[in-house]
Image (tube, rainbow, N blue to C red; front, side):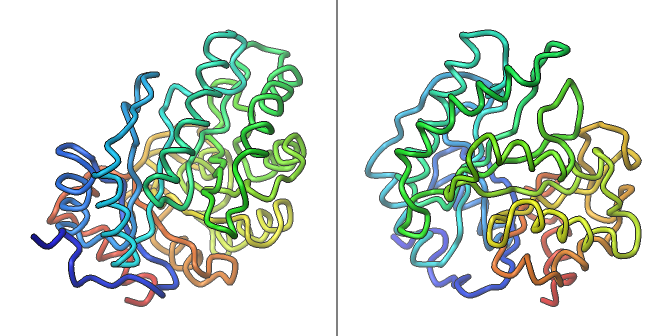
Length: 298
């Protein structure tokens, strides 16, 4: 029986467009069916419960079928780590579980043929503990990165996703990436996932002409060429600098569509997938994936 992506070909797209899909009935019968229904060219999935610590082992046969189907279609896949992960947490149990979860999700990404694992950069929770939290980030992630292997050889990337700046965030605006990357010795397996709602909430002027391009310019200046590996394409329910993580449909929030045109046109986004995490983006009749395809130039 043909798999849901049979006959599709997404290889070679400058910016494949897609959304975070639910696994539901499974990676093939759930995630790939949903991807085909919405016209996604790239997808993001959870490899387990996004709101729990359980480490789901997966089914090797299903993993292989999923990997073969996405590979045949040229569909690029990303895994998002659970929301509970906080490598800066002052609670030892939370830190230990976070480290285990990141390591596990990177293993699952390799099983699935996924390109990277998106991890929120976390918070220090308590006032005045940033240095201690960053030391934890370093101690937790560097051993994992050393075992990971080289993404150039097929190992998944660890993709840092700066947050919206709420709750004593360790890394919100693009400038915050500088000390975060330094704490990880600018490890070659560390990439960046740029969430447009998050950086806008943290103050990036994506709503101004040239603002999105300037934001990417600054990211490349800090992180270096080639580290931007994924864009979470989200508009914002709130105004710039509100430090609120509330995603909105593209063009219906305070960012607007012009920012996404700029992002698609920027040289540093060549080859970078755009994944929606907005209301309705998983619905078959939702216009956002077609809109993004139009903004990139079909």
